[in-house]
Amino acid sequence: MIKTAILVAVIAAVILPYSVRAEVTGESFDVLGSVMETHKKEYNAKEILDSNKDETIRWREKIVAGYWEFMQVNSKAKPGEYCAATFLRGKRVKPERVAGISDGVVDGISDGMAVTLFGPGGNYRNALLGFSPLDKDHTFPKVKSGKPVLVTLKQGNLNPVTLNAIYMEVSPTAPPLLAFAVPSIEALMDGMKDDWHFEVIYEGRSIADITWHDGLKARDELKQCVAGKPFDDKIHLRF
Image (tube, rainbow, N blue to C red; front, side):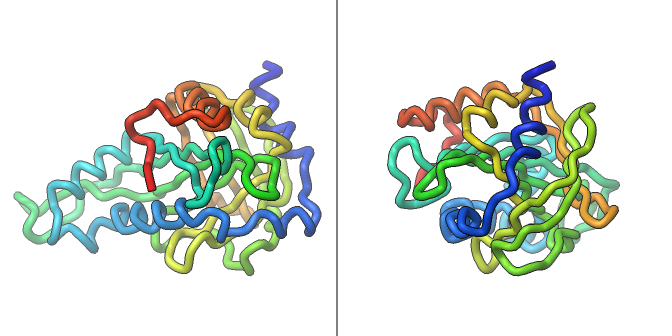
């Protein structure tokens, strides 16, 4: 029970001063920005169905199941820096008709979301837990990058916590990121569970809702990276 509660406790304990917020900028995550731009296009599959139908449908099945990706989110990262694990997932919806796809009907997808765990890098020596929408018509707030946003974070069966997240834009066309500060990557990893649910509420409206699986495997991959070692997993993204 102690470890289960750690993730909420360490996040709730930190409210970043503006001097520290300046060290956490979207420009620091250029690799993540590139990756999320690609996933946004894949997720909004109607835009590319005509050019790559089979691959698009396979990707939809993959994101409905949910999967992890591992990377160093800064292109100039040294070993052990900017380590990140991202879990992506969407929800299947009723079939929709798309011209040129076999019988003309494919499953739709909605509420696409990514949750990312970030380790320290550069001048920022803490950790972050961040959420990014994949839908074009997402309901994330629109504020200036780097500004705090008051939200309520729900995790598992724990009591909700209301606190500030940092709104960031990691590239002009990538989805926005809402990030919560965590005192250390060790605290963030210690709080991870194998299966865990998150929901973020803004002004009474749910704007992020995602459940990960295989969290302990992801934790082990992060530990490898933080220790300055290569990711073991084959889905490590190399740039």
